[in-house]
Image 1 (cartoon, rainbow, N blue to C red):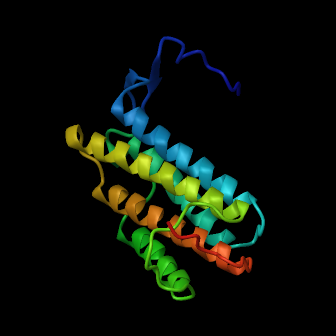
Image 2: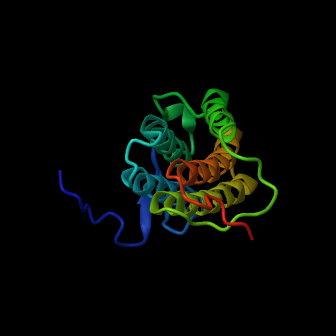
Length: 179
């Protein structure tokens, strides 16, 4: 199979289950933003310490592929896989609670940064927030699974906590630099 198909050369792309739309369609923008968030998380996961919550990050990346598939399918009934729902959101919340319990309470805003992996988590968080905004915009005109918005909202919170946790784990003298 070739990587290029030339079917998008006129500025259109195919949707899962049929139909074509312009590449700047809100649906394409939404799943494109989710894809970018997935790539940003992949970058963060690849950085040292490499084993830091690796299984959780892989699960998240798989969930984001599922979200991308849902968003690329105007008729989710045509997908032959489970959709994102409350169980996946609960996994994120449990991870937030687990990690947050190990960190000092926040009393101030903190500057994004720290060790390279933490900075990558902060960047992934902002990309995820952008993806969330694109999905919310799409939801104004088209029906989407509301659990996707819940998931992306919780995911950005988790990425923030992961950044704090990796900074704390690395023994930085000032793991959280306040604003």
